[in-house]
Image (cartoon, rainbow, N blue to C red; front, side, top):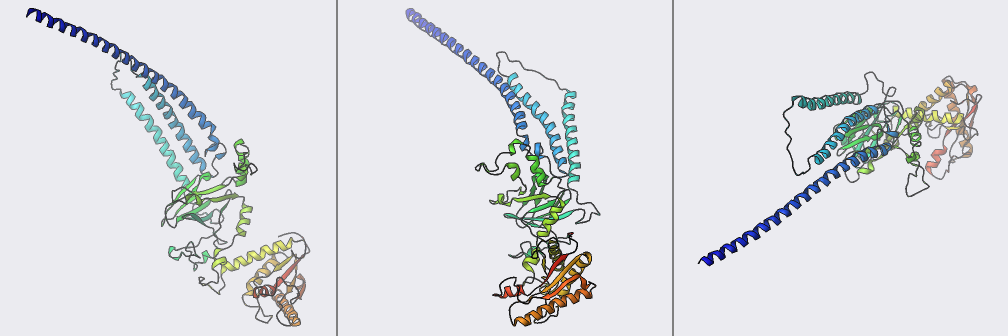
Length: 508
């Protein structure tokens, strides 16, 4: 029995020795893993510090490198009078948030390094510090208050309507932009400088905006396919939508306003840099000397292809990108020339159709357009070199059928002629009558001469001296303007013309 007990004790002693050995092996292994963990966190801490330095330097360098491609910097300073308020506000905000950005990232990565795992970690105990609490509460509050106050001041300035007493057409221009999927309908006022009323219930295939044709202000409104504006003159844009939410966005002018169905909005801004001036500015930067089309090395350089643009800044549907429109900023003379080349939508598409409530009647807008057209034609004729250039057709003069008697409506055109001849006493004209080839040639010759004489008699009755007429002649059908084979051609040939001759070659 004693021997058995001794044997059992020896076995147990052996087991204890083995277990102690294994514990020592495990302890050694654990100490190695702990060291590996310490080494790993040490490497991570240093790596984060390196990343912090590279990240912050990369942020600054990339901002400097790409600044000429960002609004507000390099060539992209605001092209509107109010734009600097937005750019300055963003720059000030970027200054303060940039400081916070740099400091927080430095602290973030420094803490990751400073409090990495070590062999003998010690906790830091920081007692409550009222002064520190006040500092990190007060400084952000003061900065934020300054940013909010300056932002509100800029907002009130930017969003102000035109001042009281400003004269529409003289002190500012007003246009309208209506968004829909996926385009913009742009509307300009005519000579009256007033945009007519509209009603969505009147929208149709021939009336895309629902203009009320019984409102005379609509009669001279124009619907061009682009925005052209004069430099240095305030523009008030009426903004609305037909269907969904859109956004009227002119990035270069810092203009951005929602187009909301059923709730018209507006934005007032003043362009200060013409399209040509902006192109000249861009031409000074190497990045804009490259071809505008990367696939065509022969395409014009980027600076020359530049245009301001109108975009929609809402995700209004799959055709969202097609809402882009060209915006041209020009000087006043070029703007007025462009306006003179635009035509009234009503006069071009609605006048004397079944949709026209004034069908067959004389309207003011039509008379104004007739006067502008006649004045333009006379200006061109006065500067003409050969006889063809000096011919002015009096398009709005008509006679009773087969007679030389002027119709009542002809008085409007002839009144314009009287006004022009009185304003420019050096103009001398030949009055020429023409007919089509219907009927007897001798009768046509006599009729055309009688009609020319009727015009002459009207003008002399209004105080125009007959000495201003170099001749009063009828040409019958001997001078066709076009073929007499169609009714339209014959109507074109039945005409009365002025042939302008100047004693003084000064233009209007």
